[in-house]
Structure formats: C-alpha cells, structure tokens
Amino acid sequence: MDLLSLLPYDSAVMKLKHPVTGEELKGIELDIFGSDSKRFRDLQLAAAKEIMGRKSGTAIDLDDNETKAISRLAALTGEIRGMTEDGKPVTDAAYLYGKYKWIREQVDGYITNRANFLPKA
Image (cartoon, rainbow, N blue to C red; front, side, top):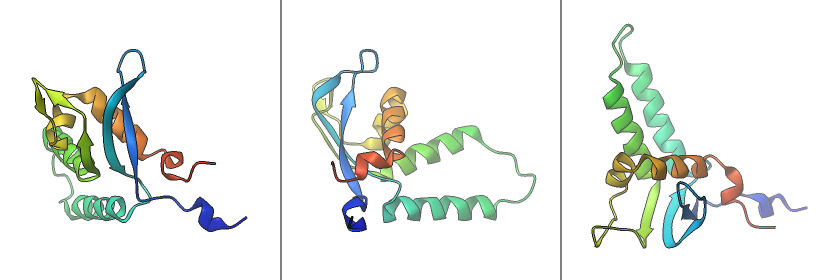
C-alpha cells in the first residue's frame, strides 16, 4: 500500500447538520482546515507561545480565552456557503461561532476527526 494514498488533505468541505435531528442541512457548506494542516499547526504554535509567555500566577480571563478560541476556529474556516441570517448571507466565521455555539461545536469536532480529511476509500 502506498502511504501517500493516506496522506490527509489540508482542508475539506463540511456539511452542517441540524442541531436536534442530526440531518444534513442541504446547501450549507463550510471549507474547514484540519488538524494536520499547516494552518492548524501554525495556530497551535502561536497559542503555545502565548501560553509560555504568560507570567506565572497571572489570572486567566475566560472571556478572552473564549474570544481567542473562536478566532482560531475562524482562522481554520475558509468559505462559508448557503448560510443566511435574516435573509443576508453569513460569511464571517468568528461572528457565526460566537453566536451559534452548536455550529462552533460541529466545526470543532470536524477539525479533530482526521477521517474527514483523508481520501475516501
């Protein structure tokens, strides 16, 4: 078996699912970068450097941490297609993940599932 056939893609198209029924929401897609992508690794490195640079005993601001987590997740999001709010297209991933936690949770889970970024058998 050629190992290159199991090399993960940097990004994949995620189909959003209804938060209650789990059914795919037709026509809604997000381009998502996975945990093996350079973009993800760069964000992880920057977060680690930030943590290492904190002074010992410094209080952690939970609101700031959540804002940064949303920002990192948004940086792992490419194009958003088929999503509207009040009739207007939604293209701002940070806004989307801040307002709709269920979408944020789906994207977060998608990113960490390597199978989503491997060629289909």
